[in-house]
Image 1: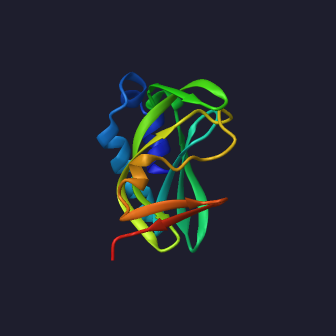
Image 2: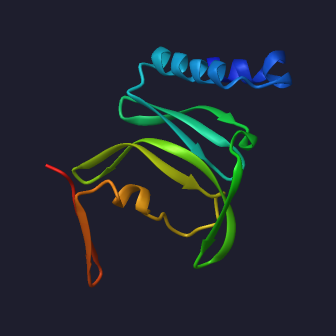
Length: 140
């Protein structure tokens, strides 16, 4: 059983989940597994915590969806939904890499595709649309 799972099942976590303790447990799991990185992904019924070990993503734990606050109203082509705010530590598109990018996530099944928003595009030197292509230009 992972450190994260042990903490989630502890009496203290059942009464009040402490985020710094939870993050510490996830980092301990990554170190124990010799993981190169951690992935925290909102799924339909939980938030999956997975670690990349020898190039393969391995499930470490599942966190309760209640950790995400879906409190941002969003209008899309498909209609109205709620989103949760988060910050992407690293966002890479091709050779362009940005860090600490503000993002929104919606519950699984609410959108058919991912959207690249202005919080990312505004960080680039320039971007342009030609027919069906989006051209991104980063700073040198």
